[in-house]
Image (cartoon, rainbow, N blue to C red; front, side, top):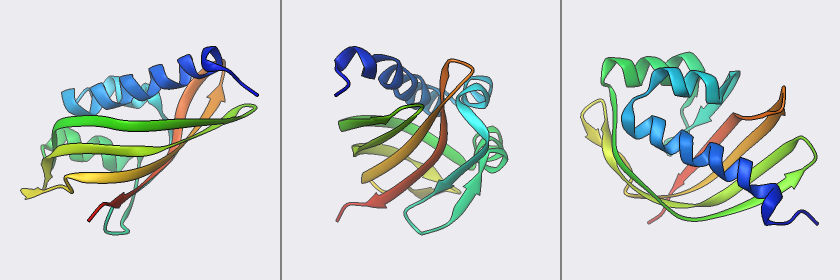
Length: 125
């Protein structure tokens, strides 16, 4: 069973992903997200990598805060699944985003770097 050391690079990508979202760092997100990245949000809408980057660049998506409340890492060779919860603040097209969510994210190891392939969020009541 993988230990904590195996999780460190995966958790580092998650940390950098969160920071890039808050900072609106398009270049960092471009490096973290695979080209075929798919995001499924709380409303069931799906957006690809280009859509996420465009929403941040245009200001449609503004993330002020993302606090990871918990994250479990499940590693399967060159794939890792992150499951957890977070509290967040921000807006999408001027409307507040869900304040608390559960998430599942899929990361893949490409050229010795962990990258995000997909994410899915569900709003907590």
